[in-house]
Image (tube, rainbow, N blue to C red; front, side):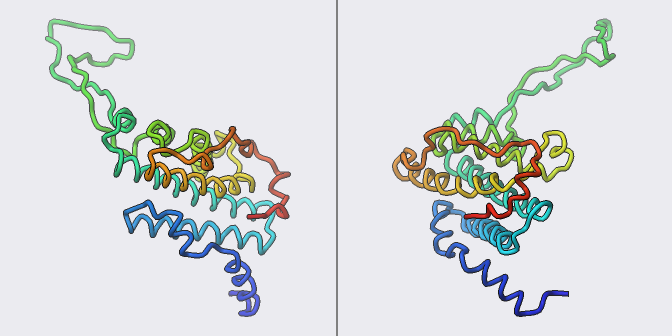
Length: 245
């Protein structure tokens, strides 16, 4: 059963008060020519900011804070990935940096060995005559780190910004519990703050590159920033008062 109307209005008004203006968000992603994709990106960005403000309004901590931060990381990582993939395969599909990651070597059977020839293998596998060929890799199957590397090589993402985006995507993969346990992934407020703050140099850098062929100096990081540690830290999760856009 929902809260009474007055309380709901108070919380929603708090969240809405500082959310970005729709026109500003549209301007942030105006270089995305695919309108359906741009609309979806804008919606994901708005939802991430809304969840942030909701957590701030409720002053959440511990496991409640964990859930709010995790959602933001997933949203921001999805935006970074969607834009990078869009640019690589809509504007730079013929660039060597893209073709280098888009093809892989495989072996194709061309014939079986004559029955008179026998080769022993340690695992008892059959031996065939094969040729090595080059096949195109589905973009979905290409490692995200390789996609970021291609974007950096082309030049529309600053190298240091790219390293941060890789870390956000690694955190995003923590939605798979086995991966979260194996890699000791924990979601902390600093990580979601950084994912949000990197969005501006990321988008402004792309816009500048598409216009002038280079990333503006203001969109480059001077040095590698410190990213929140991957190991769990109960201390950081309790500092809900650190909420600040």
